[in-house]
Length: 533
Image 1 (spheres, helix red, strand yellow):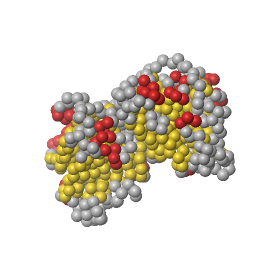
Image 2 (image 1 turned 30 degrees about the horizontal axis):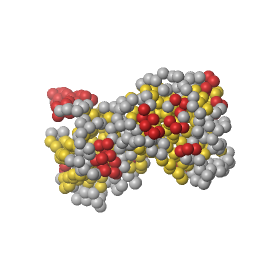
Image 3 (image 1 turned 180 degrees about the vertical axis):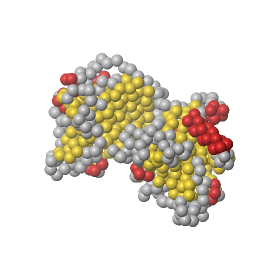
Image 4 (image 1 turned 60 degrees about the vertical axis):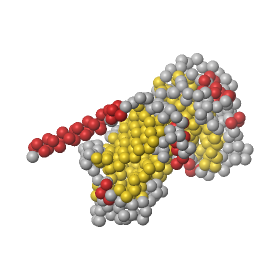
């Protein structure tokens, strides 16, 4: 990092330029396919050149993600120092709203080495003209030794240096080298207190694996820059390249902006997904481990119909986790409910210690141990089951009978029927305090397998403070680090946030219509079959 220009004060000290577009709520998308080839600001003046040389930004046919003619992309090259262009979409951004930008990008490197860290591309977000003292910046830099560096300032400045060369693309010894496509998403929830945000940057590769992330949640600050960002009523966004030649270029495609309040409901039944690894750009993202551990299976869904799909969780070496794309708004006094159906399969073969078949992770988008709650189903060496849960204090069910879910077979694989799991948590108006319950129900027996109640007073547990201080909540699924000799399937995921004062009846009524209709349909078919006999 000798001579690095990856410092807050060094990135794009650009002049200010007023842009008189109207601020709106909603969304903006650009795939560049309808824009003529060549310099984009010349043929599409709504793309405003803020600084530098317009030749740095051109539309190229056949360069889009599909690689086919007619699929275009924006090509950003070095054409002198300090080039920055503003996107047309300028969306309203109020308190309690989440502003986000996402796009696909692909890198090209030549063989010319760089003497110090240089920015390959820059994403700038802020007020009119994107002046340096009134914006956030996220930037990818190439280093002199061929490694990579990511720097971000939204809202807390962070630099990740010495990222492996193969994280994005290795610089070739001769000629040029082109990367696969990556997907970038940056989002910011403006919270109630001045200078308070919940921000997340996620970059995933073409297989959906997360290769770079930065989560930052602030509780309010006196920092002038962050208060200025908080006061913005709309967000302007721009793309650019650094002050010096990075020895390469970048292609951008499928760009989308949105500004909206966090969702209050989320459902996933997997039938719209390809029969393949669950992860894909902009969707469920593999946080670690193999994408093949999380696979969409056709014919394995809850209904049993040939086309009904479910998420299959299979052990892969080293474990792993997959993050749901949903982030629901959750304020003090409100109740968060998450439910799903699951079934299990076991193969012959003992385990040496209690081993998880799957885990449910709830909390901060990083899902790091100190920033999440967990519910984990494990099988023990004596074939008994255990369930360990945190919401946010700890409870466990050890020594559940071997037949509580399914018995380990002596020879061939066996499969269970479906079970129903549900987490309900009311966030108190008292800091770090919740009333939570997690229940697993056996619909065949029409009885609970077990139920955990968590009634926490104010606690210093980091898992409580992190979740309570956030104004949004997300979740994912994971697997253990040792082979359980078994498989789990997940279907009919339903998450909802209910307002202050919601009753138990309202919670029961919030169960997905899709799930209820499926249950009724199956019951009707079974009645018909019985009547036919």
